[in-house]
Length: 404
Image (cartoon, rainbow, N blue to C red):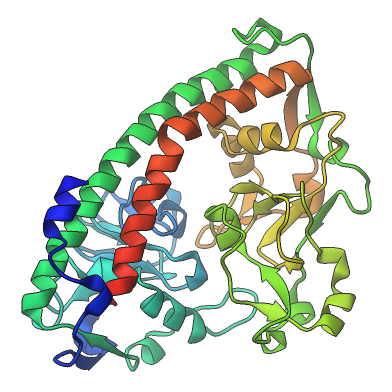
């Protein structure tokens, strides 16, 4: 924390904005629209929306030209790749090399006369920018930002001199965050090997399960009718149904960030009555099934009454067979994610296939004692990396939002 404290001579609680100027977004950044044909390029790095992590400026994964077809967007080292589809997922990462990306992204390049380039990606992750991005998105099933609308949006920015100081402050928090991400990645690799060994070796696993069987997803839930359900589509949940306060609508961001307190979408009580089949409750499993596919959250106790949106799938498990957290950790494991890839359709936009196919995916189910061991392994991982990692993310997010 010392590096952060040294830079905190700036009083973030009392920033004097009298000298700040307002700019249109196309004065702040340029939209790079250079096209690339994946089948005819020397570029080797492809970044899809699935490679961008929610709330992070770092791009930790990538694909290759063989993964995609159709025209894509060229980016250069230092550009920011911003997911313009489903902006509520808060995806904007810095390119660390040249390459090309999904056409469902915007390639943005900071104007150094208006904003310090190193500060620009932090600005994009501010609530100020991201909330505006959500507000101007169009479409109900897959809301998308149009450059023609975004470029006209106006934002207030500090003078360049102050930006340079703010850049130093955010750089310090980012170094700490990057260190914790590296630790988390190392622990993840260890856990992946343990889970892979369990799923491949079965009873011969070092965890020594008393029982082992492979069970289809549809046979792990409480009932055929309500056990597995996708969120409401199309006209059932339109943007115009949202109100300022009411029954909460839970989104992918709640699952991805594992935080059920966030979100600003609500419907009226009478509309909830018609959508009650999509209500979520404590113990439910929620799975992100569009865009960022395969992330899982267990709905905690005491959440605000609400329903899920169309980007989520709900499962109510038979806990005599499988514990919710065992299912979550197993589902998000690398080997299960590879199984999911076989059940995914679409190249530009990843979506889980029909429920009939999803229900057939088989899970290795062990005895409850071994399930608890698996849960303990993951919880120890969270103890080692989770709280410090979340703490670093929260500090960075707080500073960004105080600045902008």
